[in-house]
Amino acid sequence: MARIQAEWRIERPDVDTGPQGVIGRLHRIANRMTGELTTLYAKYGLTEGEFDVLAALRRAGAPYERAPGEIALHTMVTTGAVTKRVDRLEQAGLVQRRRSDADGRGRAVRLTPAGRRLFDQAFTAHMANERRLLEALAPDEAAQLERLLTTWLAVLEPPAT
Image (cartoon, rainbow, N blue to C red; front, side, top):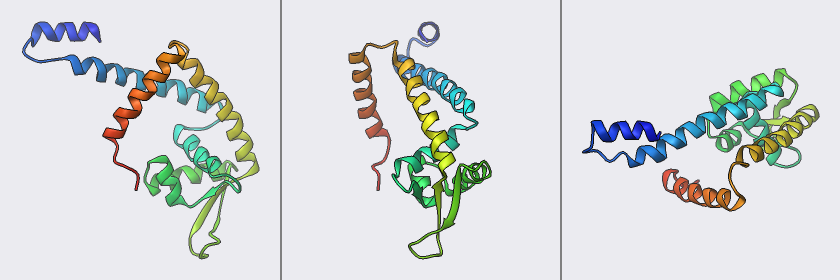
């Protein structure tokens, strides 16, 4: 990034390229992190989206169940995307669909015992992987980065409704 910015300072000295240093580095880090995370998920036969669905169900607490609309909210994707992910997870025996107890018309998605076992293993490995990825930073640096990113994200993301 420093080289790119230096080249722009020569070619376009009239433009402040400071933001590119932050945004460009964040973009590169995000791409690297995505690769690191998806490689780990693949070891458990999961895509990133499937891991997110299982995580949303596991975080719900026993009986590890949510409506598809809730899953969409917790994974920030459309219900159509949730349907595709749930289809694959159901075929793999990791989740099951059932009629909702609330009104009998809606559907609910629940982790199966096999899904919970697999997810718990994957999540343990996921957290160890994230810890490894942060090892380049001192604990106080990681905490400072988290605070800065939290502040920035609060400005960029609309409040939850």
